[in-house]
Amino acid sequence: MIASPETKIKQIRELKNLTQEFVAESIGLTTRAYSKIENGQTQLTINRLNQISAILGVEPLEILEFDCEHVFNHFNNNSNNAVKNQVACDLKLSEKLIQQYEETIKSLKEQIELLKIINQCK
Image 1: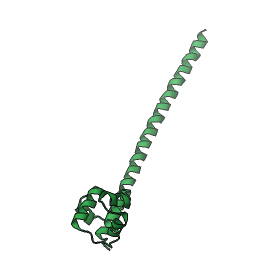
Image 2: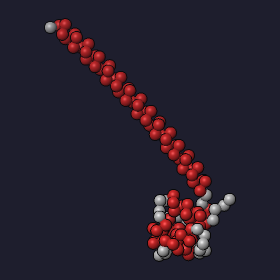
Image 3: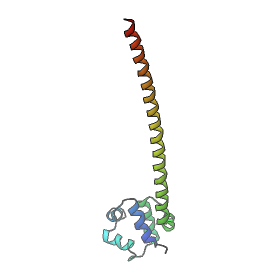
Image 4: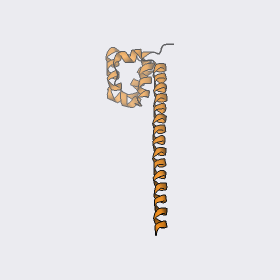
């Protein structure tokens, strides 16, 4: 089922963590009047769509073409990629730390052997 433009506006507003109060105030409406737009009780005009899209930071056409499922799938894919990238970075860091520890241990062993030789010569 294709969502109405009003439903899409609400979804975008919520994704951007904006309140109805904020959007309503920004376009000069009461919260109740704006709520009626999102609920489809008031007809959405082109002018109002342009105002709302400006507040939401998207083009009016983006609202009309908005697909909530696509956004969430894209977000999840990006989140998975971010997690994979973080794990890869953590793994590289761990490998580098292990290499540094091994080099430090080798150096300390060499120092111990040198100290033993020096003590034997005394």
